[in-house]
Length: 161
Image 1 (tube, rainbow, N blue to C red):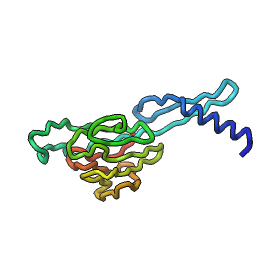
Image 2: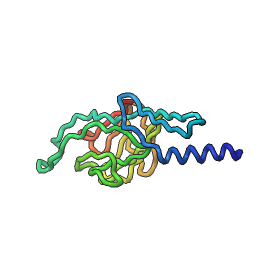
Image 3: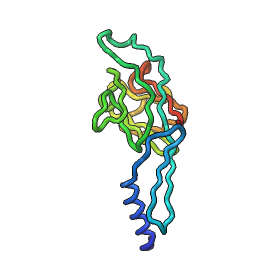
Image 4: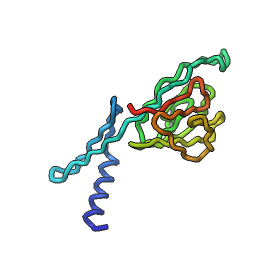
């Protein structure tokens, strides 16, 4: 790699680490990184994905003592996100259902793909009806279905926003 190319790569990395990412919009997220007035601006466009809650949303299978709010849709706004029962420093996608583990699954998000890794959850993670092996990344296709431990309250379909 030439010295000029190495300098450009280093500059791009420095800029990307300082870039602010806009919140998801209806169709896509657009982040503009400008280097200097004499360089061209680099534009990165990333498709916005959403996990849409498509389960029947019934609570009959839970104890009557469990006060559960039906989970909503989950916008995927970062390259790596963790699904869990309660939001925390490490859990960025909260599904407040007792059958969802504290740190249930990790999602690896890119502009053209989403991959799901089960984090040794108690009740399992399923893609299109097949249980995932813990610690292995599986592709979740557009319009594919993923269940995070509870097919009634935590059943989602991957769609583009």
